[in-house]
Length: 182
Image 1 (cartoon, rainbow, N blue to C red):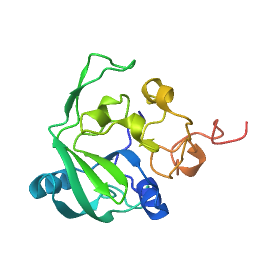
Image 2 (cartoon, rainbow, N blue to C red):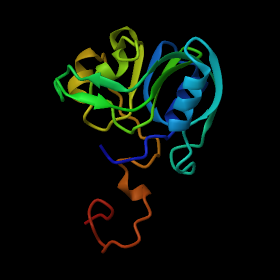
Image 3 (cartoon, helix red, strand yellow):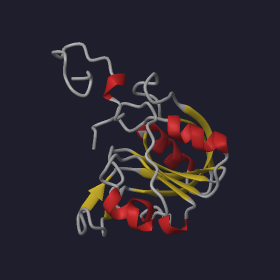
Image 4 (cartoon, rainbow, N blue to C red):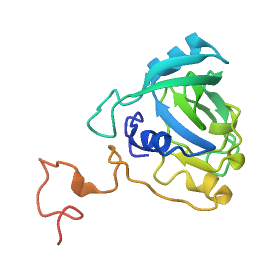
């Protein structure tokens, strides 16, 4: 992974505003939101500010949501896919929230999507989703490409952009590739 903070909201905001249907979204790292979902309890609604707290200027600020709490777990699950199969992972307290027709996984410990078990551990069957969104630059491919009709890479302007020219490098000797044409 890129080491980003995991709470960027630009893409999720766009998905909700576009009214996309039957979406699975992995994930927003937001320990406060996970605790709020736990306090509300499964089957109840929770009003919260999701994500965008670390650096709202990069990747989008918090989303004001009124969400249905679908599931809660302690975040422990075992991977079964080709990348890390047999390994236990721990994302800490995790919640599945539903806003309109978008199911959002909220995690406490940061981590990218590398296995479909990250969805199934919260009761989401990824093969039944019209759209799956996984915040991962490369490591998602082994588990998710085989079930995808199409993979679309998105640059949301958050910290882990592939467009290095967008970052304000101040202490780097120039010229240097890929920032400069050399």
